[in-house]
Image 1 (cartoon, rainbow, N blue to C red):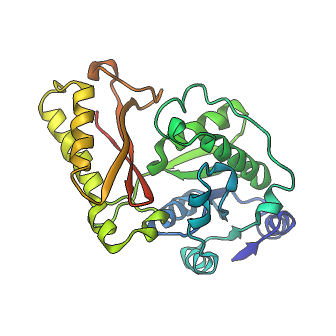
Image 2: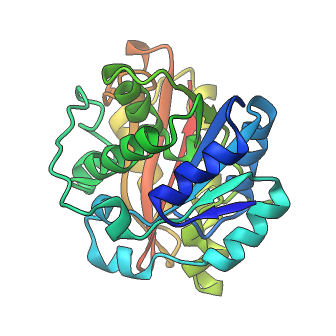
Length: 283
């Protein structure tokens, strides 16, 4: 497995190892877990050469403390990636990626109006900055992203289309622990008590969605969301930041269940200072 820490080493790696292979890219911020490995497995199914980027991108953090505490485990990540069959790891420094300040501003056509957009100003612009840089540097045929970041996935599909990248954006299902908690690098920051409480998020979202379906979607949307937030907050370890039901394509918040044939429920919940996100299809 090639480990490239500079752009030149990345170019040299491609030139030496895959002059004609179909190229897959799995962008990550490291602290890898089984969810990331499932993306790599999918990439290996579809591509002859798979590169995994490991880069904690400073421009997508609106909270400096979150950036500071984000887990960084490059040595362990490389061991996992070699075992998983990755062909190359791109692990650059911030100075390598941003020799100058990136001032680009992207238009997301309203896909950032709800969800993480208002809660994390500038976050998606930072994501678009780094992902387009990775696209330009790697020139992959396919790029793989998890559905846990559902809104991010939709935005990156739009960016690829708007900017004319000939790249297939491949969505990969959420991977969960046995107790239902969506796998996340941030889970490593949970205390034992918080980790025990965290599955309550997914269980409550799922049970509430099942109750809604049994009612024939007769529970008003605002009432449904209010009840869901209250149920999550019943856990003393958890505090819901937001929950929303949105159209799965436009990502616009819905107030009438009949206004959309495909609805996603998403939200963010704090366990202490650790911010956890999750989403499920509810219609």
